Every structure is written in structure tokens, then in C-alpha cells.
Length: 325
Image (cartoon, helix red, strand yellow):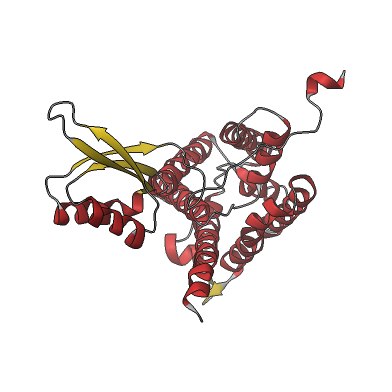
């Protein structure tokens, strides 16, 4: 395969791998840690946990999860368009598949969750401790899976699609609508499961804690690793630094002609934007080529354009709500 084709194909392959790994971790968390204790952390899995409690003796969490995932994917296709839906396609297929396999598979008559966390027995003196650990571990794995999927420029689908639809037609941001949706699922799920003895106040608390751990892990995995930086460099080795930026970092640069306020000398400032993942290599090169270089690095909440995320335009109806009168 020619080098140019490899260069173009690798981002696509990496994106698919990230989304596949993210979907698998999400399925592991739900099927092996949260499901055995009927922990409801919100989202479509929380709906599946609540619905499953309505059918004693019949495990249907994987069935309900698959139906909801596919249904929301189809809704997203019609409302948000195919371009957005393609981002959720991998998760919409792989997550229900992984979840069903992990939920149903048996090894020597035992489920995978029993092999990992043991048999769930409410009379066990360590039951509460095990439930808390399962909730925290499950939330951490969910957050990690979602964060990895986001790093692959994908989405886990499910409730994310509802949040995107709300953002399209209102001014409510996705993180706000996602939080409200999860809270409603937890509350409604508790109302359904409580009379049947399938939940109690501690499970509700653990479910909320699991959701908070999930949010923290998304912040750690996606936001921290996806941070972009801007550096200004003043150095006598500006040609070598420019060569490294262009050839090794594969980034563009801007040069400013300035005058030193103290020395009065004419100098060049090299400005470059890059991802946090490139920071270590950048700093090591500067230390090697010019230890006396003056470098300032600042984080940026958003960088859009060539080499970074594409510019996003929020889709709205052709008429403003105020014009519909």
C-alpha cells in the first residue's frame, strides 16, 4: 500500500479500533458489574434494568438494550441525518452484540459475572461492599469506554442521540440534557423496581455514585487526553524548531516579527498549535536543541480547522421559533 494511502487509512482504522474497544468496555461494565446487582446508573441500560424487573424469571436486559439501541439509531438517521448516524453505527452494532454475549455466555454453568465478582447473595455479610465496588468499577469502565469512543471521533449512541436531538431543536446543551435524562431514568426506575423489592435506597445511591464516577472518567480519558495546546517559542535555533514542527509533529506554524522590550533586539516568535499527546516529544526536542529557548504553552478549550476538529454549525429549523407566529 502506498505511503499516502496508509497515511489516509490509518486515522480511519484507529477510529474504528477506538470505537470497538469503547463499546466492549461499555458492555463489560454493564453486563458483568452493574447488571448482577440491578444497579441503575441511567441511560438506556438503566431503562433495561427497570424493564427487566417487570418480568421476574425472564432475563431480558440484553433484549431491551438491543431494541432501544437500534430504535434510537434509526431515529437518529431520520432526525439528525446519516452523517451523524454513521458516528454511532459501530457502537449501535457492537455494544448490543458484546453485551448479549457477555450477559448470556456460560462457563461450566456459571455466568461470567459470577466468575469475576462471585455469586450475588443479599445475605452475604460482604454484600454491601461488593455492590459498592461493582458500582464504582462499572462506572469507571463505562466512563473509560465512552471516553475512548469519543477519542475515536465516534459516539456510543443510545441516549447520546436523544441529547443531540434536543440540542438541535433547543438551546439545551448535551451535557445538561444527558444529566437530566439519567436522573429521570434513575428516579423512574426506582419507582418501578422498589415495590417489587428489586432496589433499595442503597442501590439508588450506588447508581448515582456510578454515574458520577463515569462522568469523572470521561473527563479524565477524553477531555484530558484530547486537550489542545498553543506554544510560543523564541529561540536562536528557530530553523531547526520549524523543521521539527513541520516534519515530525506534522503541524503548521506562524512566525511573528517582534522586538525585545529589554534588549531592543529583533526576534522571531514561532507559534504552533498541537495536541497534548505531542507535548512530551515537543518539550524533549526543545530541551535538546536549545535549552535556553523561551517557551510559553497554554491550553485551548477549542481549536478548529485544518489538522484539528472541523468547524461545527448547529443545525436549526429554517425558521426561528419567534418567526413561527
